Length: 267
Image (cartoon, rainbow, N blue to C red; front, side):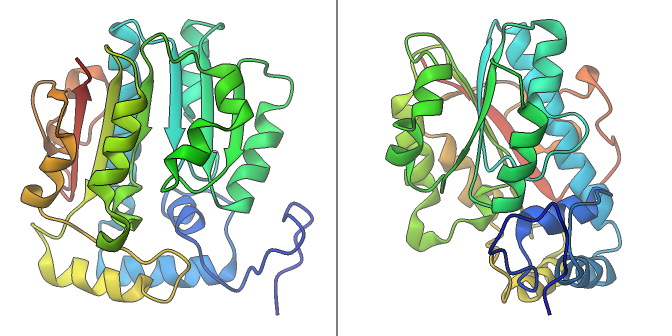
């Protein structure tokens, strides 16, 4: 039986786990259901450092945003933004620049509902419920068109989402469609879970997520790096998350290397 929570949008089947809510659980958040916690517990039984991996990815997102701001970016499009938690993109950027603009995109109803609550009254931030694998729908959405000026550089974030995109949906092609829509000077931040370092454990995680709403597809460095095609990849290149600009903030140095990350500039 579905759990009765007043904050759950009508019609949500809380018995079906979702990646956004499992990630929220791994980050220590409270907006997840028994089905999500069951999957999260399975992940942690398989992957003892699962919480550290999730935290490492979240830390990369913050450092990526800080670097984008240093490069003069003042508008951000966060694809697959997930359940709102501490250190959201708009909190990071608007603390430094209240006029900075942020649009979140997610297809998870709970993620969108909570984003709407958090952003109420914030005229420079918005949320869109859409599938990021349908770039034309995302880019033509009225909220995106209202808040993002595509004549100026954009900070595009695809953090911890591409490993939910099957080969059939063409993750590289999805990235390329967004890349082509961005003006010169835009920065694209990508991160992706990999099984390069723990093939057996990560294979078991894929199996644990197989029957969730969001199956996973871990990829090697050789499979992930080409997704930066057509971009000038900034130093230090495509590397494990702890090795990417640790000077910009806590990076979990010496921690898990199971997330590949990088930022590319459109020239």
